[in-house]
Image (cartoon, rainbow, N blue to C red; front, side, top):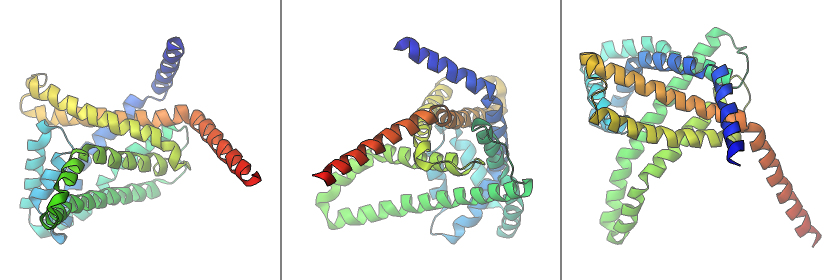
Length: 290
């Protein structure tokens, strides 16, 4: 059994190398890095039209990245907020097109993994990439609203019904499971709709669940490694930028591995799903016959 698993793992590695996933991860990480400030500008432009504050934004986004990168995030958001509203709005609209480059690079990587040629024209791809960027921003703002006002709602319920405090404390301990579920859904949407191929939603769940788990473990481990070591001290004042680039690269690499898992094990998923459907139909027929 172990020999068979090793052979499968080796074959999986060979096919990943053939698709040059490392190069695509580098490309996506680079363009996402260039898109970070435009995306922050779009976020900061939209936030004043909601009940949210700058501190809400910093707190929420800070939970999604390694602790060592939080000072860089705070500085970037503060710089954007200090810009005048008019300049910020014009700049945000002008850079919206640029912010889609990260999604465009990810599209190319997923097309390569799924072995499909890109037949959509470049302008359509850029429009779609910018549209997906807006969806991501809307999702972040919605999550922020739920996160902030969800706490207000919980506090109100507890004040009215004190006996529910134990229940909500238990649910609080499950917040990491909730984050994992949200990331799994997000990655599933990426794997399903971004490539130039019609993909079945349920077939993308295994790779998405894998990527969500590994992403969380990696971010935690990376934060510990950077926080307790001196591996990036030689870069001096550039260390934060290097750390961010490394985190983005490995994070995107994990996402692409999840896509490759779905591609590699896709036939097995379909076989198991057909067997399950056959058993269900057989059981239904037996019950009908009775």
